[in-house]
Length: 482
Image (cartoon, rainbow, N blue to C red; front, side):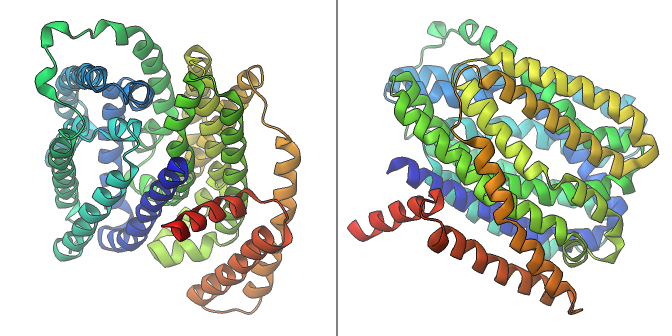
């Protein structure tokens, strides 16, 4: 029951992460315009890239280690402090590098105010502590905290962002958001961690360095193609191309975040089951995660691809027409990246196969860098979209190769093919409605209504055994019992 509850809150969090950008990004895109939104996204991606490197893999390793120690308060406190200090030390070291680049790199030096605030944004990432609260299964706190702080942020955005030159103010608001997150985190942290019982002389930071080093190399390699792509595009092309690319990829990443919420909520429980030797339950959860991701991911990817022109127009305006093709190119990432989280982290990471994950990440990094320098200068945002699509497909292939030697997901190919066949009605619905020449908003609304109707009929009436049906039944039964 606890797992279903975690999934519920994590999906709720992911949906709110979808809702707020859908409200704010169309407004921001129209106010700032393609060039300035591209400049802002360039600075934010640069900051997030540094934050990812400074985390040294703690975002994955920390969840795993905290999940193991959650039943032992003293061990939990020591592990938290050790990992937090490692993250803080790395952040302080990289801060020197970050500040130096602001003065030495011409592309950054041209906008000193923006990149100064992006540096503060980077530094405050160390206090977000998502890895800790995920490890102790505090998904309700994460969801509620995010919702209310983000709601205040949305209100402030509409009040203060008024002109195309407000991109620096937009970054300042992101900094304040992280500041409040950090304050709330440390207040709530005291409920689970008694810092007074932690004696610094007894801390053992060294024990984490070897596994973190492997994960750091992995995260660093992944970051090259997952986050540095926007930075590379900004350097090899121009800010406007970044605007088109980031607009399309933002939508795809939002959808991926919703699907990732399912696997992320399962991860701590799966680690616990594996540690306790309950392999049958572990395999059952793995199968459920795979079927949930495929059942939701395929129809979502199909609809986003088919509705790309209408989505871009409604969300970003006619100035972002060049974002349509990158959006269509990157829609398969919804399925590819979601499957990577299952094969790469729910299988390989739980089994501590960090070296295999590293090999996949290095393969992706090398491939991405070579392809980026070859096609981005020519094809700009379209080249960046093709690069990340092919890179993620390569990484998934390597994950599957290694994971199949450990554990196999039953009937994975057959299930995938069936869901692709079940997705054909979405194409028919879209074709029929688009032929009627409605306005974009009516077209999208009509297609979504009929598509949702088919989705619900398929999984709750036609199919006898649906993982979605069993999942919803468990939640309803729990509410009735209460």
